[in-house]
Length: 126
Image 1 (cartoon, rainbow, N blue to C red):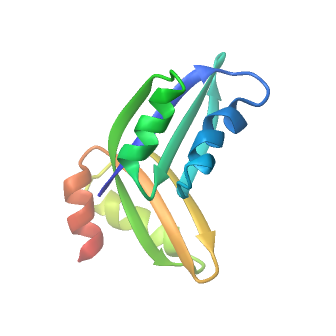
Image 2 (image 1 turned 135 degrees about the vertical axis):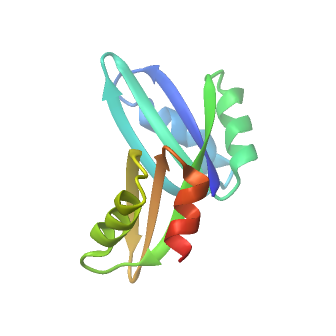
Image 3 (image 1 turned 90 degrees about the vertical axis):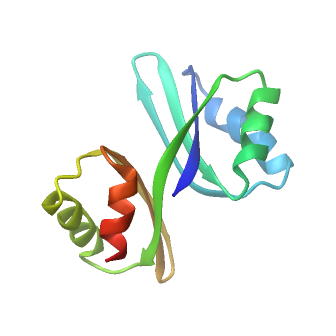
């Protein structure tokens, strides 16, 4: 389980660079990120190595930051892994709200929010 910082900001060219610049300047490592557009807004979800410093840095930019508890699983990067994870969760009637991931080498980081994050962690650890 981890915390995710969520920024909703008017979408314009360079907004992701603006949001992430202060994190880079502070030496904060982004472990996973997804940026999407809804209507005229950019929604940026970040999991970092230091959640509280991330939130503080974003608020220092006068950005409205929301926080959410998410499941973060570091798993082996291999074909079929996402299918295995999602099938396990579906068998336990755990509905995903959203999911994103990042991969490097033989490791993969999967981040998601569900209808029951605590139960999802237990299911994945079985």
